[in-house]
Image (cartoon, rainbow, N blue to C red):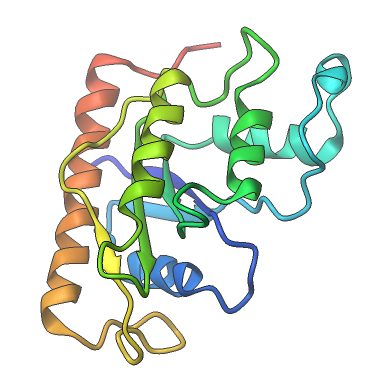
Length: 191
């Protein structure tokens, strides 16, 4: 069985983010054939096209981390009905300069948690639009808009609600299958 290396980006920079806790839960619930590694985005400077000729070290590290993965999982909150600026900034760095898009042909999935009843639905639609432009194959179903309620997750990411746990486990299994399908059609470029 093939093991998929999956990098995940957390849209919130808060150490107490509910999406960071959701990411912990997803790591626990992922199939054994997935290895998840966080790709940090908090130290990136703001993207500026002037840096395209000489990328800062943090941006080079981001691009290299994404390029070293089979797939990318985005775990994001919703800020003002869209994606957090830090996450958009990371995508801008990862997808530039022109012709060197680290997200191209990289299988991706999007998930997020919010206290609101519609979870992160609007932010996810914006994020999917951005990733589509980046030529990043998207898992469109199962969609996952998690309404966070106190006690839904323990501090270490254990899911306390059986129905939510099963849903998240299924989401990760479906993502694993999606990765395999995409990579069978679009294998990573050989160097």
